[in-house]
Length: 226
Image (cartoon, rainbow, N blue to C red; front, side):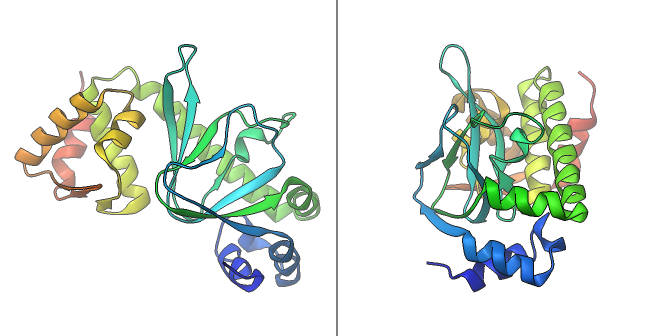
């Protein structure tokens, strides 16, 4: 269990909270709480009443939307230090979560009430600027996801690997099923393409993770035209 001191130390290094004065961070951390979730456990479900801001401390969270047929569509992977269930509600009614958040691994999150967050948001312009910057980044990511959906599967997977590399470095802690969900394809197709990448020497695969061994050919594939 993390203490208020632990939460303050983490938030002081996390966007957008790191701009807050120490005394305000003390107040926020004192009123926040850390919550543990096991692998595959749901943090919230699309349509649930929304009253909290969430920040991932440890682990990984997968964000899903569901199609009209009930098929899960992975739209985002949250890494430690990132907000979730928050930016998607800014500027609107924000009464319900528009997506589902599930722990991909054992995870630890910080839960901050909307009331506490909005209190700080309304009093500190620097926090507003930080939130706007994060919203812009997420919007660009969504636009990129929309554009990539028209690309061949091999290219989509290459784009996904480079995107995840920017977030996690050369070791990607993802299963092939998770990659398939994010690329919008089948596990079988993902396994086949990842095997091809591995034979080419671009990646190395082990249970639950991938190592990117050669970025340049993956980038060339992404830059290539259809």
